[in-house]
Image (cartoon, rainbow, N blue to C red):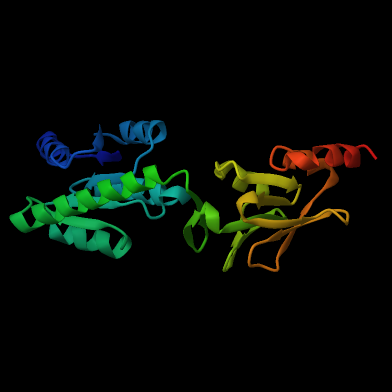
Length: 251
């Protein structure tokens, strides 16, 4: 379900927009008339889209939007601005190009545009929710990646940063390995070394003839490793190797 936070609207406009959104279905609405109420709702709920009134007190709204965009997860969250003053909307568009502007009152064309946009957001966030177990969302300074779990070979730690090795590319992330690990909900991801998390779905071969063990992947010449202290983490996935893993850990 798409969640929208409406901020700083007068009672009439707020009622109008709430009624408008409710007709689009699968939308959860929150409303705030003050900055205190807005930030309280923002901190309590996961918000997917923001509506702002851009009328008289535009400095307060600008301050809130700047704060919102400083949150990494909200760099590109949809923002819709509503105003009866076109000059305010033009100014807003110059400052925040990643927003949608609607001149009030809405004519038929704008009503259709807003309806289409809301239906698009509802469908998009519904799909993200359904696919949340299949994708890992990674934020970097250059953009946001939705990475299919099946494309990830392994994640490598280096100098308090992480390198995500995919089937066809490599992504450098300004986050330590443990933070990346917290985003991986798929059971096939196993930490095999203090510096490696491996996607067992893509493992083609484990070389136990050397120390540390080497891990190789389908259609790739890349290699990850299994340290002595992490061999037990592989036991549930390779039960025939249990005895050997145990003996190797106590040699």
